Amino acid sequence: MITSLNPASHTLSNHTVQSARAGLQSGAFSAVELTTAYLERIHGLNPRLNAFITVADEAALAQARAADQRIARGDTSPLLGIPLGLKDVLSTSGLRTTAGSRILENYIPVWDATVVARLRAAGAVFVGKCNTDEFAMGSTTENSGYGVTRNPHDESRVPGGSSGGPAAAVAADLCVAAIGTDTGGSVRTPAAFCGITGLKNSYGRVSRYGVLAYGSSLDSVGVLARNAMDAALVNGIIAGHDPSDATCVDIPVPNYAGEIETSTNLRGLKVGVPREYFVDGLQREVRDGIQTGIKQLEALGARIVEVSLPNTSLALSVYYMIAPAEVSSNLSRFDGVRYGLRVSGHDLVDMVCNTRTQGFGPEAKRRIMLGTYALSAGYYDAYYTRAQKVRTLIKRDFERAFEQVDVMVSPITPTTAFKIGEKADDPITMYLTDVFTVSMNLAGTCGLSVPCGKDDAGLPIGMQVMGPWMGESTVLKVAQAFQQAVGYGSYIV
Amino acid sequence: MLTPAEVERIAHLARLTITDDEKVLYARQLSQVLAYAEQLALVNVDGVAATATVLPVHSILRSGDRVSPSLSREDALRNAPRTDGISFEVPAALTDED
Image (cartoon, rainbow over all chains, first blue to last red; front, side, top):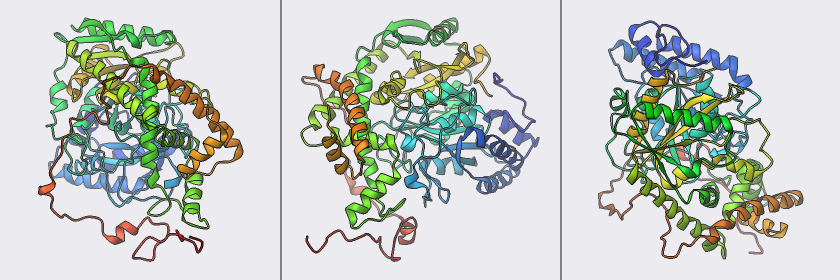
C-alpha cells in the first residue's frame, strides 16, 4: 500500500507523526489509546516479523499516560504521545538493551542515551527495542543473536540492516517512526528494502552518548520514518550539541520541519549524478527507478549534472579495514567483568575468552578478528594506516563534488531486498550490498533514502540523496519536494 | 592467505577461542576480505594524510571542567556478573607460578 502524505487523523493506525499529533490534539484519541493500538499490532505481527527484541508495554503506557497529562495542560510538542521504536543499540534506562548480542542478553542500562533522553523529554512513547545485527554489524539483520527480522513486503526476504528491526516496524505500522544508526548504510539500506524514508545524519550532528559503539569514526544516529517531514520533526529533537559526546559538534540545529515545509520545487538546485554509482550489475528495475526519480527531480526544477567520485571503487575496502579495526577495539570492553554475560574460567584470561566466545556471534567474531589483524604489529601500516589515507581521498572526492552540486543522487543498493540466507555464507558478496552507502560514512556526510518505485516482484526501490556535511536540511528538502510531487512517502504493508 | 595457525594467533589476541573447523573457515573468509582489500596497496597515497576523524578537531584545554554528578557505586555495580557490593569480582589474574 502506498501511504498518503496526509492520512486521516481520527483512526488508530497508519499514522504519520503529523496525523497522529493532529488526532491527539483534537482529542480524536488519547495517547494511551494510540499506544495501546500500536502495542496490539506489535503483539499480533511481531511473532512473524521479529522487528522487536523487547516490547515495552508497561513503560510505553506509562509514557502515554504522562503524554496525555501534558496534552491536557496544553502542551503541543511535536512528538508528544507519538509511538516510536528504538534500535536496540540505544541505551534505555531501566529497559533491556542487547545490541542484538547474546553477550548483553540481560543488560539493563542505568542511563538513557542522550537521543533517548531528548525524545523522552519531548514526550515520545517508546513501544520497544528493535532488532539489529549484532552491534549493528550487518546489512540484513541476519547477524542478530535474536533471530532475523523479516521484510514486511515479503517475509521470505531480509529487511536490510543493520536497522532492519526499526525499518520493518515502521513499514508494518508497528510504530510511527523509529531511531536507527548508520555506520556503513545501516539506516539507508533497510529504509530502501522496506520502502520507507531513512535519514543518515552527518558525523557529529547527533550525540552518540549511550549508543553502543561499532565504528566510532563512522557511527551516526538516524531516523526511519514514513516521509521526509516526519524525519525532519524527529531529527529536530535529537540533533544538537551534547557535552557528553566530544564528537558531537556545537553547531546550531536548523528548524528542519519549518525549513522543508514549503519545499514544493527544486528550482536553482544542482543535482549531481555520480557516474561511478551506475555500474554493471545494477538490477534493471533499480536503475530504471532511479532514472525515473532523477527525471522527477528535473521536472521539479533541479538541474541535473554528471559528476565523478573517482575513488568509489576503493570505498568498500577502506570500510572493511577501518570499521572492523574500530569494532575490535570497541568490543574489547565486553570481558565479563562489569556488565553482560560471564562464562566462568580457571583464571581471568580464560574467563574473558570463554565469555566472548560464547557471547559473540559469527559475524562479530569475524570482524573482531579482521580488525585485530589489521591493527596488529607488522600489519598496522599496511592495512589500517593505508586505509585511513585512502579514506582521505574518498573524503576529497565528496568535497570536490559538493563544490559543483548541492546534492547527489544514486541507488542505495545494487538490488532490492534479497532472500533470507541468500548471501549469509559469503562475506564478500554480503559486503557488496554496502557498495553505494559506505562512502558517505567515510566522508562523514549526510543523506537519505527515499522510496522511488518498486521492482517487478513488488519490492521497494530506494533512491539515495547525498548531501554535504551538515546538509540535512537540503537533503530533506529534496525528499520533501519529491514526495509531494509523487504523492506518497512510503510503502506500508 | 592466512593459515589456520595465524587465525589462532589472531583469535588469542582478540580473546576468542575457536575450534579447528572455525580456524579453517575463518582463515578462508578473512583471507577473502584481505585479498579484496589488496587493491588499497596499489593506490598512490604519497603525501596523503590519514583521516582518523572527519571532524575539524583541535585541542581543547580542560580548564572549564567542573565536577558534576556521575554514576553512583550502586548503579555502576548493578549489571556486574559478580560483585561483593563494593567492587567487581574477577577470577585470579595471577597464579602461584606467576
